[in-house]
Length: 374
Image (cartoon, rainbow, N blue to C red; front, top):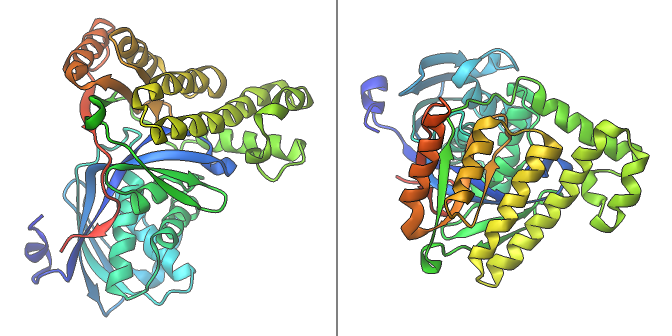
């Protein structure tokens, strides 16, 4: 990225990057205070930045254009569109009592947008880590993730859990982040795909999802209602042994949501056990079972994601599932490395045969979380 000097007339103070993520398993569990298992992607949002002393926030994106606002005027709804995300982070820092002012930011990204790969969280985290350094805040990676989550919840208006921001801030290269969303306890679990002769395909269905349209909020509200009816703080507290007795106590429309959350937490534990044992291929059936739960119980899949999963498995993938919040986005498929191109080609052919837009394909390797790069 070499546009900063041209835009602002001087060099930046530094450069920072924050990655998108793929969640291996543990979907819609974080806002139920459960377990997740994401990896960071090599694709990042990159920020060049410099402090300003006049309280002005000047933003430029290579894709979105430019925006400008006084930080003193920041409030939910005051800046919308792509610029709302970096503005939200500055607002959240100030709301948390941090004495931060203006800055110049030039932003660039190769994280696919609308693909369920947390491009918004990557943008928030890139700005958060840049501001942390520019203003000497001394905040830890989990603390910055919480600031970014607050930005998305209270400013942008998406009631997301903490997984996306924690993945972007805290993942490590060569590992999956086993995160307990209740207390943010984390463990880095090694994931050596190449050593096992495997590859993780990411199949972007090109079906754009918008988690701010109300459907996501409705699912979260349903889970919270179910927890209250069961006398729980969160569905995390309901174990699999108690599920059969709990479901009849709930309205029928809430039962599938609860069943998904409880069984998905168990799938995270199962996946971690496979990874710890070095049995990476055994992760495949866990992925496929997770997709069936998202499709049938949580009902956040769509024809394109179902087709991608079914075709990948039929083509020899060890397992596959939708990743991300749902309503479109991407599918991950665990495949033998030498079969990756053939599986991707089969999925593309199946999409074209149905009249769908051909998916965009990339290979995911566990990458490093947010960091200063210059």
